[in-house]
Length: 235
Length: 232
Image (cartoon, rainbow over all chains, first blue to last red; front, side):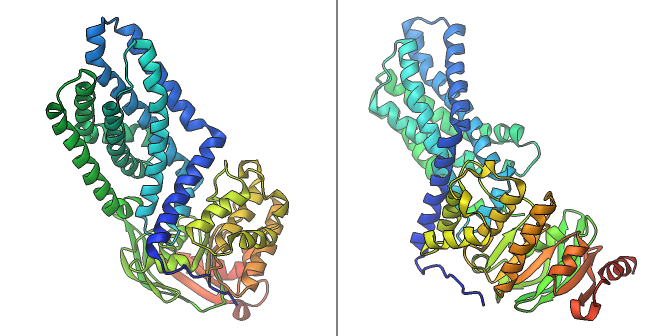
């Protein structure tokens, strides 16, 4: 007869184990294929190169557009990564494999969101120095790095949720940016304003409201994703 | 082991299942037959908690769906015509990943036992994308039995397999059933269904149109039974 292998009665550690397993699986698979990171990186470098040649800017103008150019680059590259990350799950039916696991389905969201965030942070860690050299601007600013992290968390939280929704449709490549960009306008505006503030050396009192928006946005959308992910992925 | 009463499933205005009643006792190997579009896959997706019923009662291994779906999933193994495996991970890494998702203790030993069962021990460290369709399907069965489920659902597992791969899958399926598991399999292959199944249900136009055990049916009569059920 079949001997049932029971889960240990530690729901929190089971949940955490599932989250890390999904993130580990994504990172291990990407380490082999490098499909997602190479696409995001090439796209990002092309965008900043286009900005470089299209906008022949003096030093003052460079400082003022840097935050916008960077966040446009991150947002577009991030969409590529989000689409690819969920398409991998859907194409071979692996999303069903994840949904069949006996864990709360929000663990799938957090696992995918963590790996997506790591991919985005890797791209940002490469793009920032390249941009810094090309435009001769010092981007090694702790405040800017903090904003990049907060903005990326918000973007990935919404993006992972919507990618899980759009991947179920035939028009997923088109649908994700159409759904995502209107919803991430607050995070992009706040991230651009806060980044500009740090780059232009503004007073912290002028930057703080934008940082607060980023933190609140991150918390709200992580909570929303936690609550609705189960319904988003189920037929 | 599986109890389904008056199950209805609608997708928008389209009703796919129109009041299915279905009962499976422990250890049975039920083959669900029916034409394309009869609702077999939808039915299995509901049993596996991947889809919510619109109406009706579904109980698997004593747990009600969709309310107790995590408990059902712990006791369920599912194999479909898609492998549910990651091509850029090795056979071992795929099983390790699913083993962690199911929180299986003694995972390495269990992985070795499962790879032996499906005859893939020699390919343990190879990337799944280098596997043939038949090998991927055998590994998919390994993935599905990794947590030693009581109930197994197979959705057309022979799709796309050549003759040799199908014969190998026959052996694996017989081993799976011999372990005392309750099995529900959908198939279009009547010869294989007759060889493997202990009971045959015909799903047609969204309801179970006919049901018969192998003992009742006798040898070589499944095709006639199937045609009569569809005609009726």
